[in-house]
Image (cartoon, rainbow, N blue to C red; front, side, top):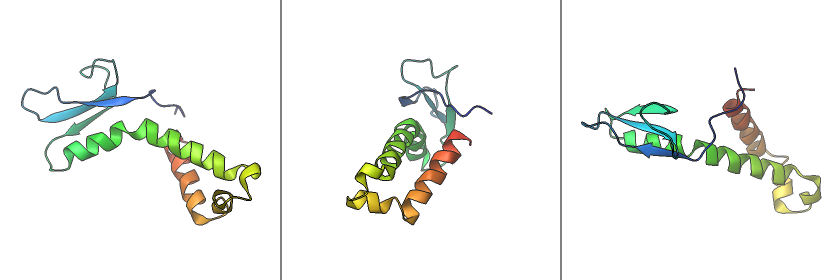
Length: 102
């Protein structure tokens, strides 16, 4: 298993003629054959689900940045530095590990 993902940004493409599904694909790529996810529009949350999936690369990048900043010893005197020793930072690190497949 690779610990890398398809580079973002990703977009939501509504390309199905009967709107049966939404494709999540890298921006500038063909969503018909280069999608990273297909969200079936069989429920009322399909649009929101597709947007959440499409935001994954940016969410991961932001989360990794936050962890890096609050874990940095140079920032330990700030409130964010204190957060690095709490439950929240452990949750963020677990999420990063899950996304990266580590």
